[in-house]
Length: 91
Image (cartoon, rainbow, N blue to C red; front, side):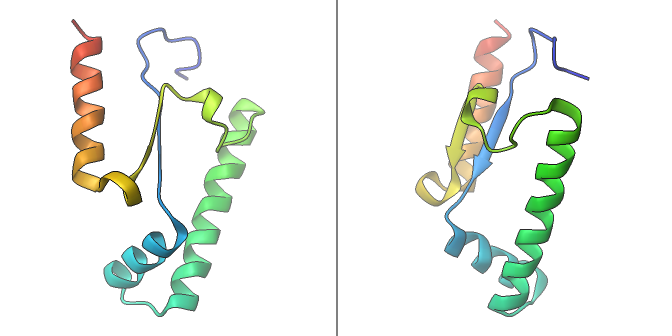
């Protein structure tokens, strides 16, 4: 839908696997194995959906204007960076 939209700002947010597992464990009250399985299922769904509509790999950094790692920067800082980029892009 936004493929040709010059105003679209495409962001990919990732994290280290251990951080993702801990976050899902805490949020959904799961053990590590169940959290890992859930992450794998969700990411497979995202990947399949992205490929179906674009013919490209979901994790290919070339398809994004900005790639951030919450394990390195934290979620709040990533959100601030995204907001700052969007605001500056609108000027």
